[in-house]
Image (cartoon, rainbow, N blue to C red):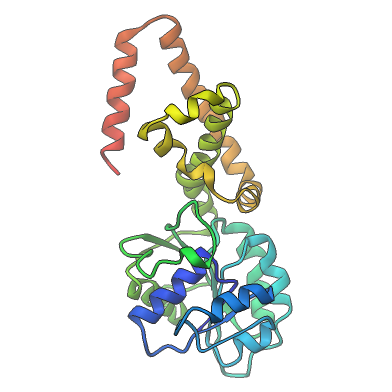
Length: 281
């Protein structure tokens, strides 16, 4: 197995495989020499690593693309055709699926491999290999996005599902489009809202920051994520997130009206409904 661009998620894949599947030979591709030095300084994590894509993936029958989605095509385009009969399975860990599948699946097929998208719903606001966690995927939802051409019982889909389950994940199958709609609601929109809340409050009353407690910190935690990555995610899934943001604005307008009219019964109902829905998580 080769992991390309191992940061938090890719590094956690390496750590988890090393801990749970010791028979797998691991290699990695990194873009920068300093990242290569960091990777090789982690004892026993990989057998081989390189800044050359084709050196890194040589002999691997499973490749995991762990770089930002906007860089995936550039990296796959550097790959030479896979050896005949090698049955190379390529997946990714990106947060958006429809544009990735449209762009990457043909590139992989042209090299003799098969692409099936993956999205482990795990991570943190941190980034980088130093925050990798071998147990990151324990009991985490992992969404696989086979295309219409993937038949039920497909061998490669079975291999990929078995792989994520071996790392502790709970696998669900969705179309790429349905994935983007659902994940937009439970991941991308919350990040936007957390970032907007931080800007709204702390740019206006910065003196409130040292007084904030767990509520504000927990609600805004994800706003500490890397802005470059999140700008790409929000851009890639902009249609779904924009529609969901419009629905949220309508919801907030109802709350504002209840506050403006001091409608205590309505506020109580909204809060009760929210608590009950939160209890379903």
